[in-house]
Length: 401
Image (tube, rainbow, N blue to C red; front, side, top):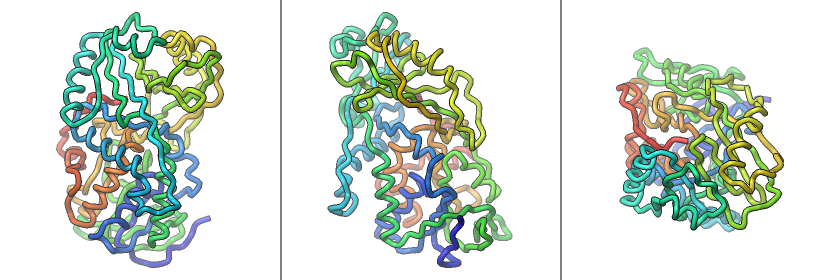
């Protein structure tokens, strides 16, 4: 059932109320330079089919671009000091960051060289990444089969996984308490001014026309559906990703790092169980409502890789599985932020291609700064701006999973 808005005009209208809509909304309320009104329009208040609900909630600093490293470093600090960031609210729980790291395995010299180059970038920015030989990997993690592996990168500092949904829940709850209006409804159209340089109002499914100062596209995999209402095309589409939770008959004696196998399969410890995932070999855009699982992927791709890479995983039992959607940026698989080059009050937080949860603190903060001050202040996020899409200039990030 749709809800009617309390007012007919808002300073900021955010289309989408999941992780990014709530991050931007909360950081706006926390920004001393902003005291305007905020409306968050969310089509599904259960969030059942959002990327937020299907996340594996991982965090890494192992990127090849320095700005991506810094974005994740702020996220790690935000998670570890969550209650402090949330105004020292005693109701806010501590959020643990399980720092057993990513383990990027290389089975050829070209990728090993890329890992070495990336490690230098990460180390120069304060990350704890170490480049490891096959012998060093075997000494630290003797459960791996390394017959085809020649090197790896690994980082045990502020890298692993966290309960991202706690961040989301508290951003949403705190934003509401601070006066942000969350509306169960759907934006179905936008009205621009005669020159086409500004969105003057949005039209809701229930018929109301809402005037707005700024529109934020936080629509996840549906981002292009929202941007088209303003006459804008962006290269974001839903791509299906699969997650599997399994139990091992003979559990490992220590945590399994989030291991990126050369096959594309990844695996990690998940409490008393283990988690694995992968993209399909054929990776097309899918329908927005298509969450059907392909069980052959587990039998034919994932399980054989697990058993080969970790021989103790020959005897395992699948306990749960699901398919979720990446908001996949087909242009360069990195976030699209900032203002549109022509429709000046239309702002993007889109196309995270699987990096969204770990990047949400820095991207939410930066977007709030952009709205409040007209510029990024804490961290220069301009490399992610939409302008690069218009110019056809790709943001190069070699560590995309």
